[in-house]
Image (cartoon, rainbow, N blue to C red; front, side, top):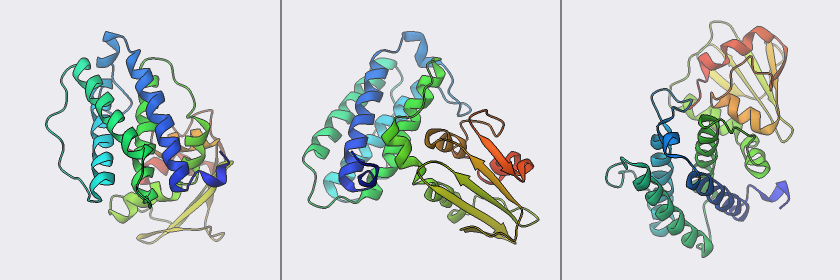
Length: 241
């Protein structure tokens, strides 16, 4: 599939199906001791992550089926690996059936969040069990084109700090470049050459891992130029998920 097609409903649907299948396949091969391993999100384990994946997929299937947002969690989280795995398989199978015969018009915004959260959960599990690898190419391409939206979420929710002095970041990935700058109490998207700018370069996969807080500013997968010291402050303003 050409990258230009990936952001369409059909492209997102196909990529989500592929990512779900890869994630569930890896979960099937976890050892008993893997489920209690911590992931990079403080206080959470592999079991917690798998429960979150099952719940996110279940909600998406319900929303696509009814057209209504589903906010309330479905019952309680699984307390054992067997229950969590069964719940994930059930959510996967139900969503696969829904996406295999999709409605005539699918709002791609409903697919993007679950796709990225599933891919990141899959990556967190791989990292926890010592088998970390880059995100799949299709997911990484979609992620790079979604960086602005990922950064915008905490801005709109009022969760982002503002630096005392005007600064700018330019996030450069092969698929897309995202520029964001701050002056006063506002963050803005787009470049502004008036301000000191930190240029952060990375491949598509590593860029998503960086902006979501999964790799540190000093990681060798990042190439930083310009006002390099500002890279260490990025997570103060955009802590990730």
